[in-house]
Image (cartoon, rainbow, N blue to C red):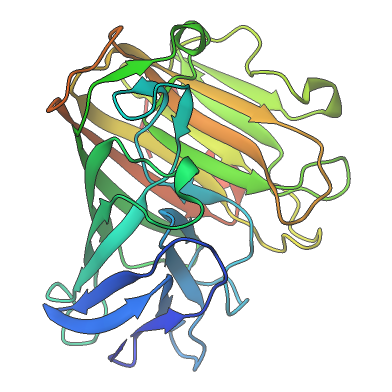
Length: 331
């Protein structure tokens, strides 16, 4: 759909149950797909490894520009949000309104330079789903995201996400899950297959009160909400890492580490931001078995028409040591 000899944007096939979305390049419709790929040429080579893919389920995967593998490994995925677990006017039983159903992805290449390099602007909107998997989609909000994909470097790929949401019906976040900091998820990270030998992430690392906390995912912590004693992210620098250090295990290959820095939030959620994780030890390579999310306190009920914004930055790095958190200095 687009090729300037530096960036290549393609529609690809995938068997996920969600409906396809429309793709626009510089305002021109390019048809529909369930999976959109962004590949960037490695300088002084003819290789175009993928650096970003977008699924119709609202799952996004990132990796660094110099990673030699042509496609992204099935490692970490960013899940566009927010998500809410609770009840609503149309769903009187507790439901996890988990991931969106994308409706349209519009790519703007106007900020690419004459040499073909630069950043891409990506506008995403979602809609209600009619797919068989609709029970897990977010059917209580109108959602949109403005993404900026920075020019990838050898060591990192940076994606800025500015999300907007509007409640389309009255919603009651589950009060028990609210007490455990899991009813409202500002954003989520999902990964697959964790054990002592093969894994896609090793640890959660975050900044709280000027101190760095590292939580390794050991089998003894499976099926528990983590951290067991939760603390809020540093209010001046709310950021956390989802860390991967095994670069040779299969099938994850060079799954990157993710750093997420929350820049701002508006809307009904207030107070400090918590980061929470939950994993199991399933060896089914088709199952997501680690969920990692950021939580902020919701009111007891949220009225139809309530709006809000969540602005954050995701950095994918092949070297987890480059993601060391610093209490005083940002990256």
